[in-house]
Length: 320
Image (cartoon, rainbow, N blue to C red):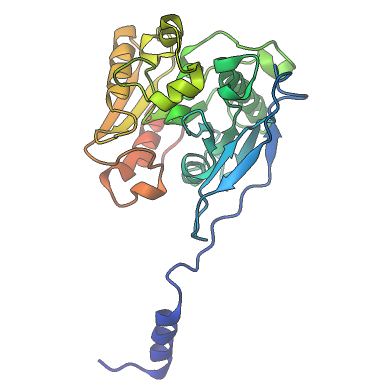
């Protein structure tokens, strides 16, 4: 095959180009502080916040946030908003919250479909907050209300606000979805709004706090080394009363060695028993914590499309 000089030079240049020249997308600069003053119950908190980058590849970030004291929402605005909003709650075993894999990366996929996204950086239960295991839930409830208030102010639909939680963030999103009781005293007008989402998407969630299927690290960070039976009962999603809860979308890989698939299966049974609308997708392989980037080209990589199709059927988004 003949190659002209320009083509040959181009191929030579490509051969000398490093495999990865792409740079991770810049972070959005728009953030919302959850609390107008200090977060509640921090009198005994003395931790120093930090964000750690684990990626050595400039093509993507892989950060986690730890010891958060001033929780925030990072806003990702779509080019063409369709009126829907999504609160994203990343996982991290309640020891930290991953910023990118289950936060920014997922948000960009939904923003590309017209959804206005809000990635939550929340407080952690082991840092000394007075609310203990309810400190992350305080942030999630406050965040959901702020997203609803923000949607109304921005011309979006405050009645089309979904939550997406992954791993331990799936547990937190599940608590947010199931519980109707506020865990903090009102601080402004936003706290008059509903604190429950209209839809809930749970990715490989840490659902149970009970043996034998518990993710031990998440339970230890949330409830301590020796939780009481009452605490296990209160914070196990499959033991909560889901009657009247909004629709739930579950996704799990059956080869998940960190959070067994029984977490989702038991929760699905509880949802069905309560008459709560639910859809579940189980994949033979995928492991744990795959988010979006780590599952591209594999069967479980279809989950954003499946979740959006489900959301479209529920009137959350308009699918083109």
